[in-house]
Length: 167
Image 1 (cartoon, rainbow, N blue to C red):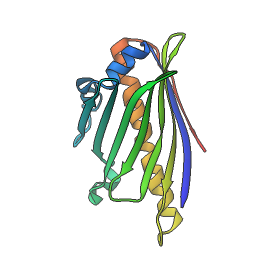
Image 2: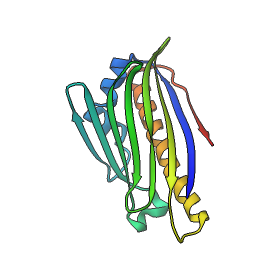
Image 3: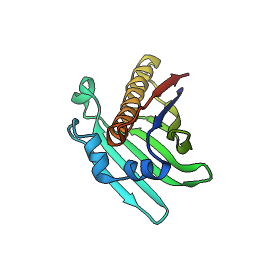
Image 4: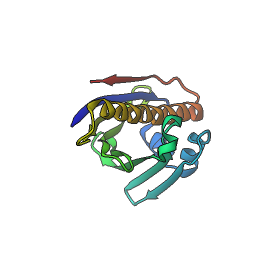
C-alpha cells in the first residue's frame, strides 16, 4: 500500500459567503468545466450544507481504459467558515483520495485550502503502477483546484495565488 499526502491552497478575491455561493452553484461549476468533455455535475443543496459531485473521464493517456474520476465535496458550516469533506475516487480502481477543504476569511477576501491523502492499495501489482496511478490522480486534483481558482478569479477580477506541496 502506498500513501501520498499533499496540500493545495489559494487566496480568493471574494468573501467566504460569496466564494461558497460560487463553489456550490451548478452554473458556475459547469462554466469552470466547459473546456472538458464527458463531465457530469450534480449539486445537492441542503438547508445548511451542500454536496457537489463531479465525474469526468481521466486524461488522454488512460481513455482506452475508460476510467472515470469522481470528486465528492460535502460542504457544511464550521467555526472557521465553511468546510468540505472531500473524496476523489478513480472509479474501478483501489485509488482513493480523502481529506478536507476549508474556506475561511482572510484579509483580502477568503482562503480555500485542502489537506488530502492519496491511498493506493494494489495487491499483487507492482509499486511502480501504484505510483503512476496515484500521480495521475494527483494531477487531476490539482487541475480541479486550478479550475476553481481560475474561475473564481475571473468572476471576481482579483489576484489569486496557489501552491501545491507533495510529501
